[in-house]
Length: 304
Image (cartoon, rainbow, N blue to C red):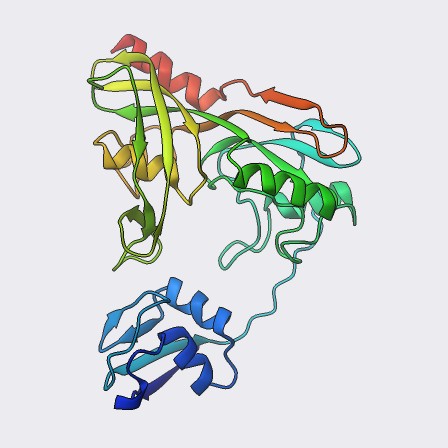
């Protein structure tokens, strides 16, 4: 259930940012809450979705759909974890395909966070709140592989700074569609929220952030390729968006490409992770074997 609120802007509101205007006129909404609604496509100006920094012309009719507040709390669940490394400051987890990283609408249980709370108890950083304790970075539900979890705030901040400075190693492997003309290359194209489908990302210059992905072809199989990818930045769905943008969507990606019979979701694995340990200062690097689903796809391609 949700409530729809309609505001008609006066001419005197011209030039104001829409997120500030709504928060000023709807007492129960903070500016950050309005920005969240905008990102979810729940705010329209004259019937069209807008960005959070949209500036009013004056005279628009704004419709904001406000969902009923829903209490959400992550609870410990006894779910097995594939822990590659663990110490007092952090742990590296090999996430299986199909597992959601943290609770969200539609996925309140069975997530990596639920499993971490059972394993770590209170020993997780609190920077990202009760729903995302310890989560420094994410990988998609249908992407398998390595990610790092912080056990305290100091470690979280240290690791987040490395990601921001692009000194954090994140290497993936994927099966992509099509024949690559070049054996290696770089996709340097900004990514932002899709204008009409707010659940999707796209390459755009409007309300976007820079995004850089380096790729190299490990092996070409006719109309498919086994590809290694290194992230310089870490935007939402970055690899999937960038590969689709250059005409080589990830095999099985129903959002940015098309489904593939025999696998659920995209064939994408976070293979390697490397970082400077926040306490020891030592560079650490971990590699994950390709999971069975990925190996099975490669075996099928070998026989084609």
